[in-house]
Length: 286
Image 1: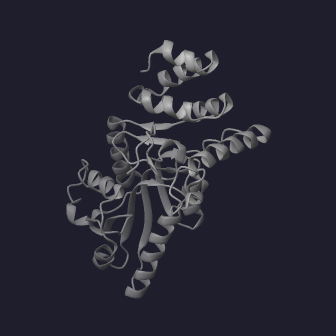
Image 2 (image 1 turned 60 degrees about the vertical axis):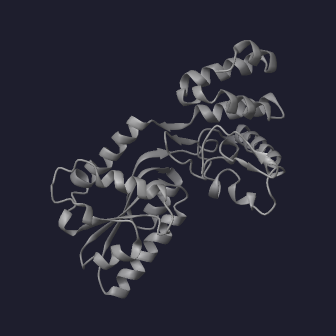
Image 3 (image 1 turned 90 degrees about the vertical axis):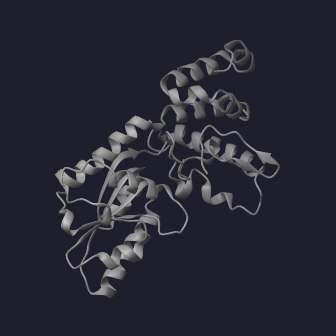
């Protein structure tokens, strides 16, 4: 951590004390002293600094060991709550692109989990859409697995793809969603579309779910000011407006040890590439 004497000479006592309490509560920030200090230094006022400290204090953090517990909870949910039959159930990654994606990581972790029924085998886990639907038969359950659901937009597109493909194949498939973590709004959007979905680690909106009235208006205004400052440093070829308040304005504050920070998180916490160099954000996103 940064030398307290150096930090206290830069920030007022109240901000310094808030920062100390934050780091004690959010231990993952303990190795981010440079990044955290630079984040606060870039703020135009102490009100902006306190808002960021408050937001980071609401971070949903999943450690490496906790992630193992989350994977086990996903498996147990499939076996004991949904009570799915391994003979008629298939799993598929939520991402159908050729390049590696974190949803494929959670799928592999799930496959390798200690299933109670030995009938669960690697042949039931697919990384691409078409092979999965080709393997499905009438009456099968197809579970789309993900590491993090944001607004639910991408997941709903995947669900529509499978629903259409099943219809073209003349079969009926029970489509479900299983995710390690996700934004509460996105999960609700999937449920509203009529699909069964289970999210092990729900994430609230960092501002709108904690503040109301003028306090919320002020906080959103300050975040907009911080994002204005950041946008001026970014290549104009990038449509930064899409990421304001996080993708689809999900206002997420989420970190998983060893994971890739979702773009639904406020960009001030993860945006790295600038026109003339790089930032040192407190969160990592590839």
